[in-house]
Image 1 (cartoon, helix red, strand yellow):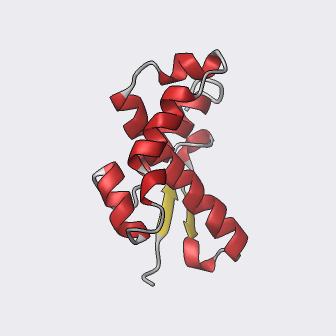
Image 2 (cartoon, rainbow, N blue to C red):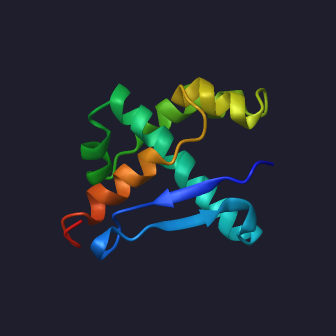
Length: 113
């Protein structure tokens, strides 16, 4: 497996870069990192299809998000290899940018990033 770098910028004062090679992380940390990247990618796609999702989640309603996950991910189970399923759902390969956007949106104002 090619060495994959996760480039996290602008998360701390003076825009320090945080680089982590996924294959150098302990397996459990790499798994969480990949899960976070994928969840951010999929959430962006679900939100673009259903802009009402954040409001529904705030109200404790998950049916729209769950339906989107059923229709786009869960129904395929192990029918496709992970890279193909990611591409089918997100329209691209593994991409850290959705996660970075999410982090910046959540913490940018708080930490003046």
